Length: 332
Image (cartoon, rainbow, N blue to C red; front, side, top):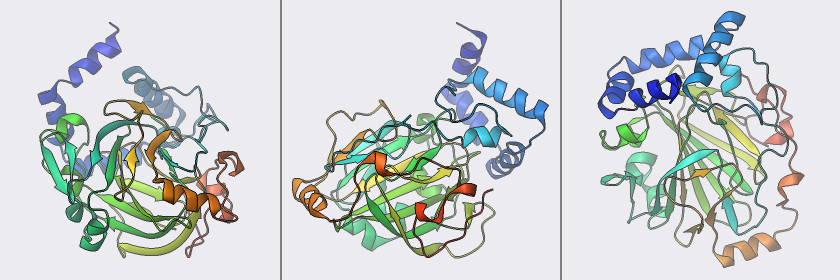
């Protein structure tokens, strides 16, 4: 056992982990991390990335670049072109991010689970009863991003985002230890709901990006605001952003959790199970045959993952990457 793995195992002890990550001023710690991670001083950057690598399974072999301006620059790194092949089968909804699969399965009415024995309702999560009712008895998947993973997220299918809802909240850690101790945790944390419709499919898919301690900022390419603790403004954003399957939608500033909800009639892909690692573009959910048939017949909808342009940093992304009512972008 190496020193790094030994210390990591110590930190994973349940009581100690809960104490260190949640019995601290979470919001202040998150704001400090947001500031510290963007320091571009070479010594601070080098030592910080070195410690991060020492204490985790950080793998930069598929990164588009290997020299970073700051820890934040490494957090939101892009990947080499072709590093994440996208399943082109129109019947498949793919994973929008690299993650560990958490609780998943069938929504019981409008109740899902953050972990076994800890339920939450879609109405509490969405703050929208009509949307919760629309996804009753559907399917859901919890996707947990660890700190060392690729932090950008992508469209699970050809889709149109018509509304984003930002819900301010707390910044509890979202690892399994906390999920076993804090009831309705996802409903308490800061989060952004992306309401999407499959192109020409009339099926609503909801993607929920949940923030956490040290991670309370979410960037979406098609909105000109950074959604985080410092944001003060409207919490509902009507939009009209069109994405191709596998196209980049945004990123977390660090790592956290994504929740995917699909209506009744979808099913988990047969290879998906709780605890497994999954990557962007790999099968996550299977569409009903009637839906996939409509998608096949839809004219002018590109389904090939290789038709999308290569991933680009938001500061240099072309406006065509996402057609939106909000055109301008800034990078923080």
